[in-house]
Amino acid sequence: EAQVTQNPRYLITVTGKKLTVTCSQNMNHEYMSWYRQDPGLGLRQIYYSMNVEVTDKGDVPEGYKVSRKEKRNFPLILESPSPNQTSLYFCASTSLEVYNEQFFGPGTRLTVL
Amino acid sequence: SQQGEEDPQALSIQEGENATMNCSYKTSINNLQWYRQNSGRGLVHLILIRSNEREKHSGRLRVTLDTSKKSSSLLITASRAADTASYFCATDEIGKLIFGQGTELSVKP
Image (cartoon, rainbow over all chains, first blue to last red; front, side, top):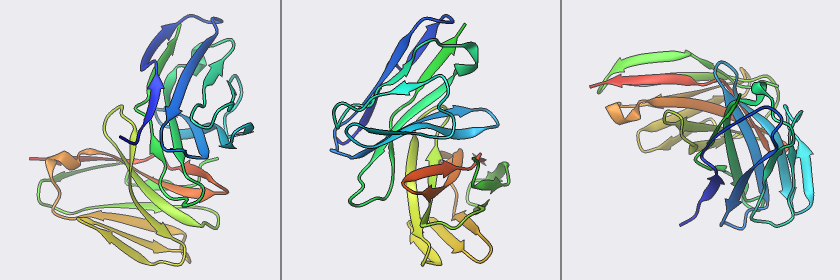
């Protein structure tokens, strides 16, 4: 089944404790992206990647890192999480050959205390 | 940067009625997409309309695009309780999507 998976789905952590949210897709998509969703602010893009070893900042990259060492994986790293990073995070992917819809993961709800 | 803005922010209708949601955007686009999100879940792609298209249909969905007014509308006909969700428009900017804040649709049985 074609899908985007994220782990963990729920995470409660404390300020300053490094964490990684994994994202994996099985559709051989070149393009992957991370979004955060906050009430009243909609979805905002954090980082995106057009292909392996190619990443770029989205609209709200501060406090986040990403890497794209393999085509299927696009982890989101919070080196020193802060409470303002409490949010619902989504990973998405799409093919650039037939750029069309983005496929979204189920979301990761992160709470930083 | 926020590109699409949906209107209304919330819409409540009875089952069987039609629901219309509007989206306005600011810059030139390659295409405009509509997504649906059930509460707290991932977004699901509904339909894409390209900048050279004016109208597109998919089942009970009808999307229009007016590039001169920089606006799009999503019409859901004969709504069902299962259509209750948030609906987002998204514009394509060099391979990244910029989402509006969404319309919350509630369809009462």
